[in-house]
Length: 146
Image 1 (cartoon, helix red, strand yellow):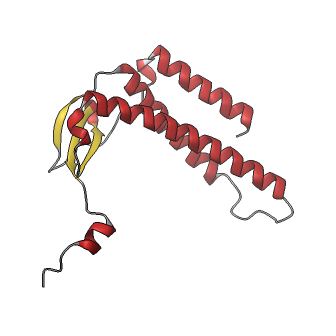
Image 2 (image 1 turned 180 degrees about the horizontal axis):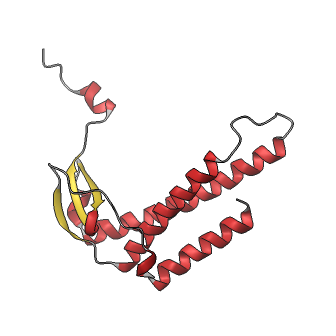
């Protein structure tokens, strides 16, 4: 995957977002789990397209990375640098798309921003919230029950 190919793929993704080509959308597959609370259904077509593009780009990035040689000779520094730059650009694009997607979710579902709450997207575009797992810092700072 080179810069030109990646750029064209990204442009195609952006066209998909703004054209809201619904037949091309990658929808969430996970079902609502026990302990999750459904806040509502995502109706925003731009958010659905962003989710779809994010999922497709992560899948394509995995294929790209999996296709790279496991060990590269040290004399191929320029090639290694080019791969690293390409990987970094793709990751930045994915993070940008994810950020836009989650901002739409937080705007349309304000309860998803509550402290200690995680948000997820489930089958049929259900937006769910659930209690966050404690972080390692929170566990370390918790009072010892003994």
